[in-house]
Length: 70
Image (tube, rainbow, N blue to C red; front, side, top):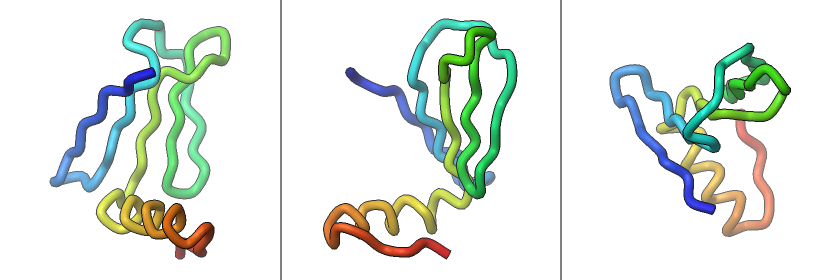
């Protein structure tokens, strides 16, 4: 599965599109991650806030098999 991604440097937000089509119903935010869902509860896209800090730590966690993001 391929995901379309875009980064907004001004807002420091990485958006990852999971499904290209669907009607947005609601979003849930957990820390620096916001997931947007359709009417059936399926995820449409997600946003990673503070992406310039979070994404490098995610890569580091993959390399080290775990890290704590603050």
